[in-house]
Length: 436
Image (cartoon, rainbow, N blue to C red; front, side, top):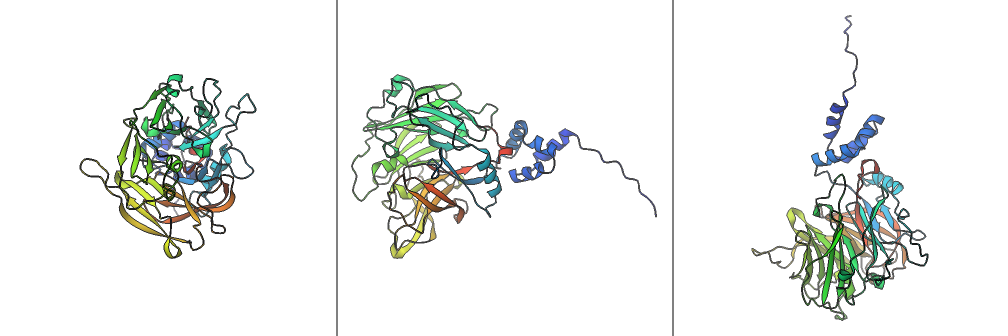
């Protein structure tokens, strides 16, 4: 029997290994490669490699990992991350994030005055969190102009924003309350691509600050690139109705429900069919007429990013006939001049929960074309629940691409309709780049 000599095994050069791993198409493939050996793990977790990989695979978006709530679970502090349960494909990565991140935000500086309230989560976007607390500047009403911080709970990095200049803050005259009267302003984050700040070596971000005054909306913008606040143009004499029909949703629900789709933020007043629109590219506010097929309560509406640049809307009726619940998905077509037409029904999604003895579900939040629904079948709650309620619920999601109901997890949670809820998208800690 002939013996065939084989060439001795040689390790591939580092640059060759680097090019091979760069061609792995998705985060799950990188995680499997990282588990193979220590050298692969060191390579795929390096910021330089991760930036190159994301540039090469721009469609490999961060996976859905769970649901984040601005209200902590009972007995905890900070806020609450509800990771997806098995058999969800991202359940393992979600557990890793839950174990690695500090969602109590204890790494943020504490106020020297022990009587001052702590940090409150106001927004989440692209791995960044925006929090505020009562202002440390005595020149301001601390409920209107608050201290602001942008942070990343995985890397535990944060940036404290400079105070809003007094002349800009003074333009917010007699604003109406939000969050059940706990605040008088609404700050939020613009998406990372608004500044071209996605996956930069020094990530940049934009914060929008708004106050809803009786006859106008005051809007300011802060960019981390130049570190300055500036005022945004706002429509004149835009009157928010303090008193609405008893059969309509309270006015604060309009302002508490901020939506985002394809470069624009929306506040939908379904009673008047008038939407307040903030165009991030132009950085200006306008009022648009958007006819709806029915007088929906704002709490039962969520605007989402549809396919091919379309604006989508999930909505359900306040009353469900015969105890059968449905969720409708609409798109908003536009005419040749860009004006919005009436919503166009695309699909009616039957929901499996009976509404014969109360509605056991509610729309909680939406982002990246994903809608979150809270379900409590054991004890259907009143529409306007207290923010102090504590309950065991199940969380579900519906993606615009599939329009099918998918269970996320079971959670112990609290909070009412005015508190923030967001679908949480992210990478496992090993593959995460700092976002601040």
